[in-house]
Amino acid sequence: MDLIYLSYVFFKIGLFGFGGGYAMISLIQHEVVDNYGWMTSQSFADILAISQMTPGPISINTATYVGYTVAGLSGSIIATLALCLPSILMMFFVIRFLFKHKDNKYIAYIFSGLKPAVAGLILAAALLLMNKENFSDVGLDNKNISIIICASTFMASLFWKVNPMILIAVSGVAGFLLF
Image (cartoon, rainbow, N blue to C red; front, side, top):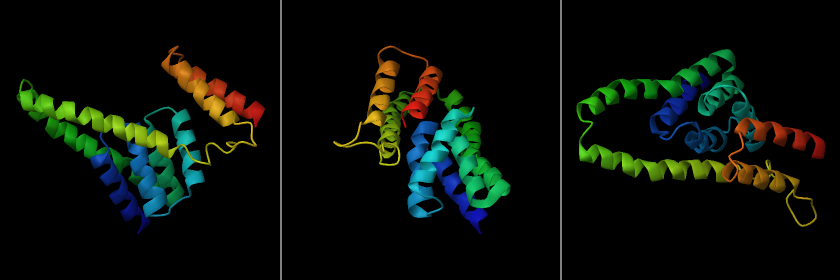
């Protein structure tokens, strides 16, 4: 029964998750943690951290790990395929349509309207990750090391365009040494 629910949930996420992997994170967390209770917020945060470090799209990695957690190897295969299937089907049909109507101004308006929605979904994913599981040392009595690491990484990425792989490695070492 879990395989049916897994396929339904991840097909739905793949169908409505515009904007790529980071935009899908809030949808995945809502379904996996809140709706179905397949895992806790802490275990989802752990899976998300692993998904970010492993090669490949974060949403597919997350679906694979969640599927494995819920139903083993068959769950990981079902969740991954269900997440990818809507995109494959849409690309087949939408690409044919767009090439036929690529100069239509209404099509351009639709894509202009989707850009803010994608930005909102990515912001929602970032805000959902700002919880006590990821920022465990926040408070007046604590050193707030996790906030310092987060802010430093954000500034290094935004202002100085530091390579994200370097930021991940440095943040991991800092976390290892400071916690």
